[in-house]
Image (cartoon, rainbow, N blue to C red; front, side):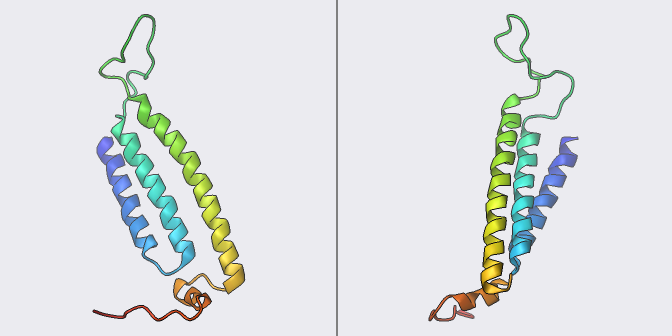
Length: 124
């Protein structure tokens, strides 16, 4: 099962990199969302996927059993979900305001908003 989730995380990260390299802001935002989900899946797999023993200490136990799932990655994922959602909401509002002001979501056309800047080099 870990292999399947790791493969899914790899696909998420590959799609995220592809979308982040796009010129359109909406695609970049979707790439950021996929990147966050891919990283969350990697954290999830690192905590072992097991249903046999929950990560709960009962009675006088001082340490978790060896076959128990690690609760730390689960807590990190919950925190990362909240942070990534708020970050995505902020970027969505920022992109909407840029679209309202400039009338486009293409980053090459947004360059017109930068006054009197030289063109970037086209080659080496």
